[in-house]
Length: 537
Image (cartoon, rainbow, N blue to C red; front, side):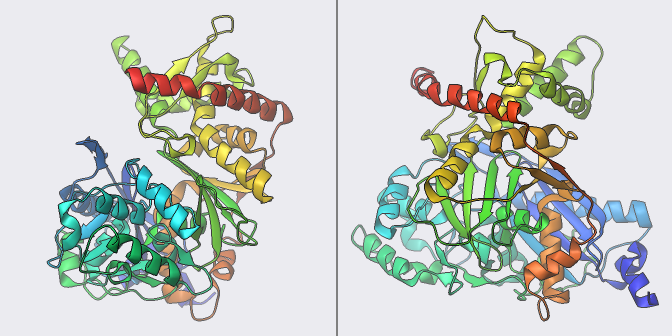
């Protein structure tokens, strides 16, 4: 091995020589940053905790929260580098920005936000979603940016005539840092349908949309004019400006001119972080929300309102099953148990609460002891709810135990997603050889993996890097832009990155699969209870 290769792997040399690649992902509850070396090894991390807010019936993050969080996350990364290596960060080989997909961010001609950011979590675009799905003959979920835009038009909101640009959270941050109004292929495909053959928005659908809009109201734009330009993985998508430096790095130590790869959605970075962009591969990202991504061998035969049709960062068609609610209600219960420990005078750190309680789920009854929970903190489009009411229901003839309670919450976190996977399997004949998992659901060793195998009836693989998540996946895309795009396809490049990655596989246990199926049947039958609770409470 040459001295150059050694320097490319030594963290101190990587930082000092400016050869690191930075990925930043703005997730639902945390903004995370990961710095990697040229061989994709993580060498420093930063994070910042934030939360969305329900304001005037809309789930949102304030604009100032976005850029405060971005700067705080980067500052935390810089502190990590100083603490671990005694160095400052002045140069980088590349940067990538990722964020929660979908939602509604619209700018006027002076680049001001016209309305507060409307996130993916909102279920307020039902009318638009239904009409666009019928017009396009293509599934348009409520989360998608185009559904939000059309709903604003149907609602006759005043700002629609002032729109100059529409983008996602990652696209917005990238635009502010670089001045380049572009977007990665995966993130774009969660705004407006993208043709995997051309790598661009479907032209017939843009024309259909414009006709539909102008039949309702007159606006001075066509949709293709306000959507960001699509860039494929590997392309250079602008450079960090001096203004971008001042926003990202409060010390202004970082040099401008660093290339940025196309901004991507968290679904795309999840595929990259699990090496799941080849056909017949699938991954599940499970945290605040949960979604399964299956790379398709052929287009779906029918339109299913519960299934998104997206593309990978390099343009392959993907079926996405997305559930708005995953671990939020479980997290609330864990916080409650933490509070109990404090009241009893033996406070247990919240992280330890998770470590102690989650494994108990594996000792519970296979069907969770007759318990039924709905972790609907927000609406759930998979089952047709615009609002949510977390519920716990139990059969008094069964044992009410802590292990069954934890198991029920873990089952509930995956139940809506499983309903979507059943559509792919039973109506489309889609097969997946195995599922690769990542996200907070898998933090407790063996627990999330085993529950996921029971819920999907599919082997679940976890890679050693699974906990690195989307920020690491975004850093890999940045590295691919500089190191691999000229000589490798993205899937070939990722095979090199993952060639010696340690993994573990859990096969589905037949009794646990039956137990989950029993729970799912109970979950499906009980949906009218959830509906009634929303109507009455």
